[in-house]
Image (cartoon, rainbow, N blue to C red; front, side):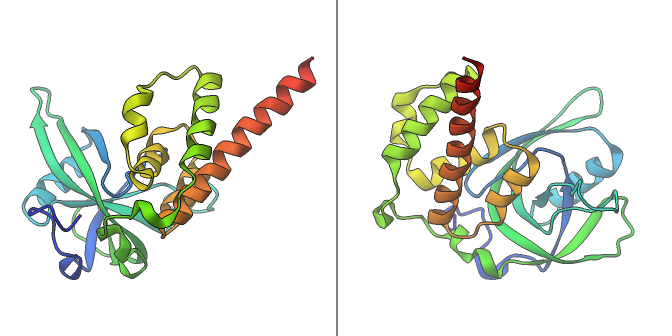
Length: 219
């Protein structure tokens, strides 16, 4: 991530940043997330971010909490890499995931959007290029993906997918596959790339094996 000349070095990541609570939407490091911004408070947030570090913290609402405004305590800072204005007053932006963070606390702000103190410590490795030499089980991952895609009716270019480094592929899949919010959050909160891959394999196994058992019960 640090190889991108427009990305702040890890040591210069800000102590606070705005957050955008959005259900079923995560962005992992080195991945992209397109967003359609139309609420005034979030239009203000984007315009303010464009005037500073261009960072927005993507977090999921915590539906299990009593407080309806509660969010999970770990999110990902995405950098605005492109934006377009629309004639009806919306902003179409694309975020690239930079680094995950733990929320220390929410801080007061005069703006309508929310802002938090961020602790980046656990996720320094988000700035490193993950090594393929760690020993990821690509064969198991791809076999599960093929079964998963077949059962869900998804299509993809398998030749291209095979060329993507496993750690990056896991990050992309974490944001693109239709996991439920707690499952997505578990991947966001997992710091090490090898552990993200292992957790992703476990989620796919649970889905695929569960579907097989269900099929068996129907016969």
